[in-house]
Length: 340
Ligand code: SAH
Ligand code: SF4
Image (cartoon, rainbow, N blue to C red; front, top):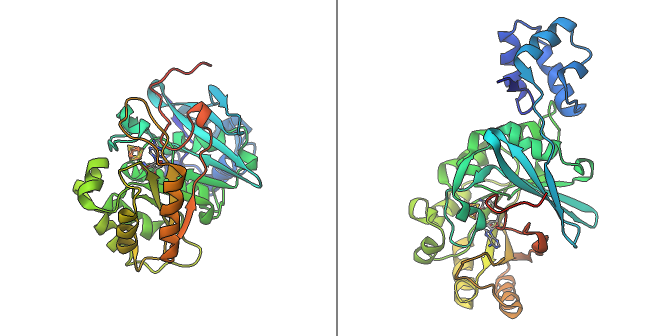
């Protein structure tokens, strides 16, 4: 099977060019066609010689995939179904919001982290995406031109697929790629310590950490990762970085009635995060089938929010978008049937 050119970094294109004995500048030319001019065939790369195109065509394709289906929410959110390698699929959500438009992309087919409240977690792990498949959700999105932000908050745990996610970020932000400002991109993770370190030291994009409970024993029950990488350690690590003003650390906190939404947890959270420059994003829980969890009431969320703000924390409550098409946080999954 032919390999995809789309999704290769300039470095990888250079290695390929060397292997095919192409001129040195060919890698940059090809990157320009792939990411700036966004062509979908090798034949469209008209400043490459006919011979070079022939060489490339023999082994490579550009490798784009159109979405196979779309669902539209009454709030304007759209959920796309994208084919990926091995006959599998992932979902991506397009979320317009006044003068912003955010794309929520997937990094894995399913997820093996097993968080108790998450639909993707229920699906289990069905495979890692390549940078080709990660970036194709952006490249082949009909609304690409209107996007202002990208969040890695779709299916999967980005830091469980670190190399491909890092390559995707590089292509999105490099001058030879899409030249997006890193501050328009946020990667969300449950906190895998070595990957957090690597990301903080090798990327300038924002990081969002899924906190969900400030107390070790209780977080363990919600998120098995706490056994291996306790949130305390993640926070201690984050405190070692000098943040420039462009970079943001935020914590996501899904509000579960009677589990993590009392003033006790608010207090514990303030203690845990004290000394770290960060923001908190409270997320209404989106009920998933066969789950014992219930969403916190509006009052509970307000009180929790107020308790944190009173202690000087910067808090926002995330709007639920695309609920009617199962596109809201934690609802993406490709186990259910799509009506195309
Ligand atoms: N795996 C990464 C990114 C994907 S999930 C992570 O966990 O951070 C994006 C956010 O949705 C995470 O904060 C996740 O904890 C949250 N989430 C998962 N299930 C949810 C649900 N049922 N309702 C609301 N948010 C949920
Ligand atoms: Fe995976 Fe994130 Fe869902 Fe946890 S919340 S199971 S890490 S996708």
